[in-house]
Image (cartoon, rainbow, N blue to C red; front, side, top):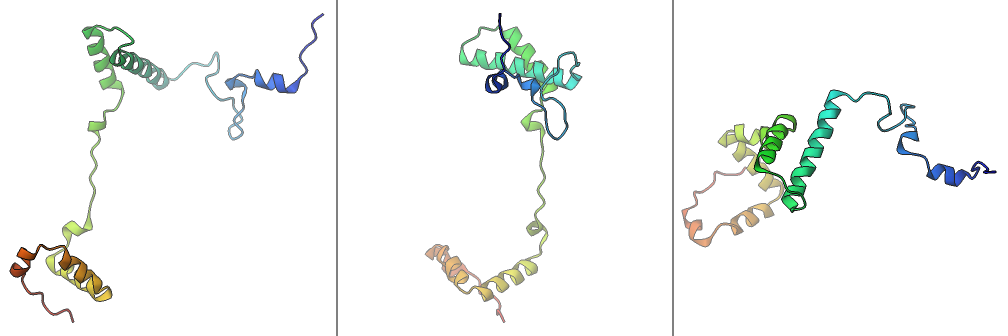
Length: 139
């Protein structure tokens, strides 16, 4: 006669990932058998599978035809966002400041930290120091 396993440790180790309950939602994690996947999840899975095939072809572990690669490229271009499709515009308030505003801020910085002027002048090549225009008084 076979006895049921009553050892708690071994029974915990045999639990599948879907048996683990998420404490926040009180639902089991992972795909539940019998529950249909949403369309976006199906597309994501298909895209991942195609990316794996293309990766294997690039690594030389899978043979694919040129037509298959082209089809994969077309499918992925329609389903996976391209990094080049993202455009970012960074607004910098320094771009809109007038010369007077910049000069005023620079004067305030140098008055607060006089060593900045010495450091700034040290970065200018000696041949260009003769062509510098004198600054207005910093009072």
